[in-house]
Length: 108
Image (cartoon, rainbow, N blue to C red; front, side, top):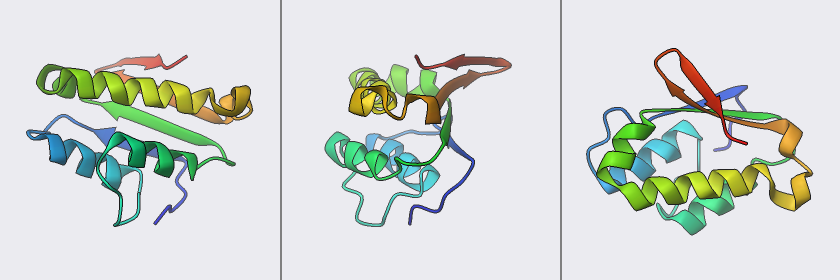
């Protein structure tokens, strides 16, 4: 649970079902077994990671956007809020990148 990694990689490329999307998040970010597979639990577990540098790479975002449009949008809103939480106190420590092929786009 919450094993610190320099980079956390979330790959949604092969996600078929909504619950599988959350399980992919849980495994990639090393969330605890009791992770509730909902957006409130996502926020709670993300904020437990604050206090040290964190780099999250997301691949396959287009897959979950296509299959679960509003859920993908909600996840990105939460990640943006996470990057800027506590009045940007941790913004310099949090890097979130969307990876598509050779293209990397940082979440601002």
